[in-house]
Image 1 (tube, rainbow, N blue to C red):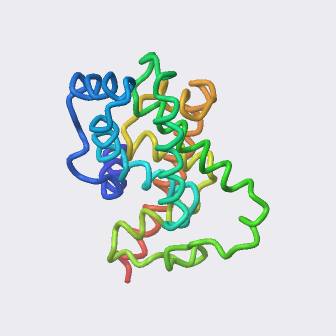
Image 2: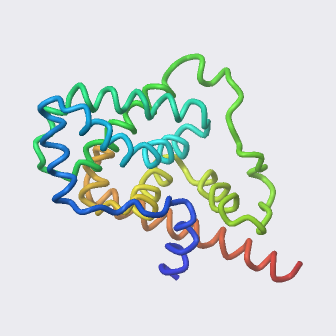
Length: 198
């Protein structure tokens, strides 16, 4: 069942996002001394992933683009504080999540109409488009569960990295992931059953 969950969520990840860690480390060293080519490399490497994580937190593609851009600005301004104790992705996703949470704290946020990706969360989504189905199911999870599941299943972070990015203990990460996976699987199974009986 875990393999089925990973396969169903794999549609959310963009292809070709792996890279040699040594290569990335060299670019980070160059970024720390202000090399603009290194900033461009990191931007191209993490832009799509930052936007994808921001969309999952904010549910607004236009705001997600802005959040990703702001996260890059913060990261590049503070790149010298990155000591390499964790992977760059862990450090950077922590910044992305902080920017998203800052945006959601704004008073105007609740007054605006949220993005729902044209899916009614009360109705079963159309199983013809797996990406839309997965997004609709993720939207039904609580934000803490959704963040942990996205960082693990879509972004491929380890438990310790997720704990660092979210600022919670590893045990909490494990319990959130367990609950999120169980809930996601139950909803996914219902969709499959409804599709099979249609």
